[in-house]
Structure formats: structure tokens, C-alpha cells
Image 1 (tube, rainbow, N blue to C red):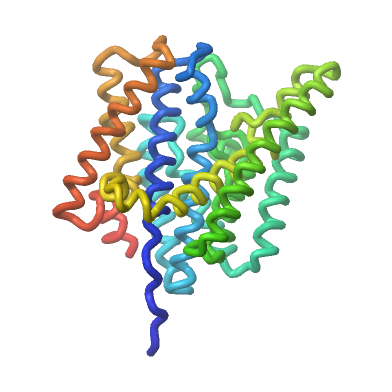
Image 2: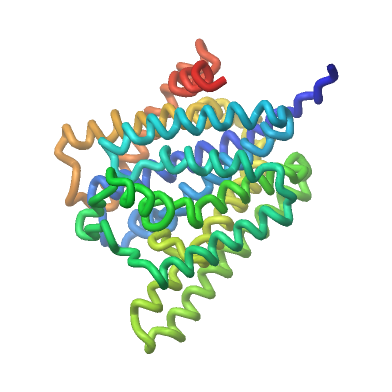
Length: 350
């Protein structure tokens, strides 16, 4: 039996995954440390990352899924379903510690993504659009606030069947509708010649254009519709809560810009030694995601830094954790090929 030659690994994707992880840590530390408000650089920087870093992470997951499917076909589908079950299990355990867990959502992104992989690129793009249309319909017909206490971001009823499904598909932190669209977009990107400089430039430019367009449309439409009521204007922001179409556009733009720039800078950053430093962490993001909750947030709690902190303190704490995580990942990679949780997933799910 003949096998397809293995394509060279695109190290720029490891860098993009690393940057998305760092962004997620910053946003999550901000939430846990209660670093709301402020008008300085730290506050604006963290607002810029909200929803964008996580969206980039999901797009990269879809990109990896698409590349793996291109190599292995149906065999990869079986592995994907097993890994979805693994992520659901550890995600639900993680929910007992951190309410904003994303791993159990990932399980369902992969579940649906595995069955949508054979679709044509055009069909996948239509699916992304329909997911966003479905969410708009849902938000005008269902109660988005049900279950939420917006004072402390707690969610009641999650462990009931109806509450779980509502949170999963509609009003959770990263609901399948429309967040599955980010994974599908990653699958679309996996079909592009990513090693080509022209593709990389197109991704970066299109991503920047999407970000600017989302921001400009949000400002213009919010100003125009403000007299009709603040609630309507709130639906036109690029904020991830609720994830309206302009947020999706901004998230797709951020992901495209990040991936394009990282691929363009790959050779130069490799020569400077940057990729040797960040790539191990970029390949262990599942381990590091769990570590930033168990170890990072556990340390914050032990130090009495949960709630009532400044944006500057939250940013500093997040960067210190990321520096430690980067060092750990590099030392671990000297002896082991995969991170501990990645190795466990591979052993259990193939």
C-alpha cells in the first residue's frame, strides 16, 4: 500500500498556537482576578484579546484536524471521535474548578467537525454562515440571560440536562452555535497551500481587513441604532458575549492575521532562536491549559489574588505564568516527545 509523503511541519503554526495560548491565559487571569475597568494599556490590551485568542485557538484546532484528515482519511475520523470523548471527560472534571472551561466545548466541535470534514470548501463556508444566522435567530427568540449571574459570571443549572444543552449550544462561554464555525474555518484553511508566501500574505491582509471592517461596522451601526435602544446596540459589538456575527468576523480576522504573520515570520524567527523557545509550548497547549488552571489559578488563590485586582496585576501574573510554562515545556521536550496530557490522550485515543 502506498502512503502519501508526509508534508514538512509548519513551525509557524506552533508559534500561532503558542500566542493563542498566551492570550487565553491573559484573558482567564483577568476574569479570575476580577481585573475589570481601567483605561490604561493593560486594560485595552486585554480587551483586544477577549474572544480573539480563544477563537484563534479553535481555528488552529480545525486546521490541525483538516491536515490530519488529509493524511489519514477515515482512520483519523475514528481517532478524532475518541479524542472528543477524552476532551469531554477532562473538560467536565475541569468545570468543577473553572467555570469558563473550553475543553468540553472542544469535544463537541471535534464531534461535529469529524462528520463535516468530507464537505466541500463551499459547503463549509455556507455552514459557517448558517451557524451565525442560527445564533441571531436564537438570541431574538430565546432568553440569553437565563442561568447567568452577570455580577460574578456564575452559571446555574449547568449540571441539569436542559441547562447543559442550553449552555453548550446557546449561551455558554463558547457555545457550539456559532463557535463551531471557527473550527470549520480552520478546516477550510487546511486546504490552502499554507507554505506558499502568497497564501501567507493573503491570510494576513484578509485578517487585518476583517478586523478593521468588524470594528468599523460595529461603531457605525451601534451609533446609528443607539436611539432605538441600548439593548439593540449591544448586539452589534465585537464582544464575545454574546457572539454575534460581527464578533465572528473579528475572531476569524484575528485568527487569519495571526496565522498569516506567524507563517511569514517562521524562517526569520527560527534563525533568531525564537521558535526553538516557543515551539515546545505550542505543542503542549493541552497540558499547559490545564496547568494554568490547576497551578496558575491555584497559586493566585493561595496568594489571595482572586478578585479585586488591577488589569496591570492580572497582565503581569499571566505573563509570569506563561514564562514559567514556556521554560517548563522546553525542558520537558528535551526528554519527551509529547506533553504529559497529550501523551495520555494519544495512549487512550490513538
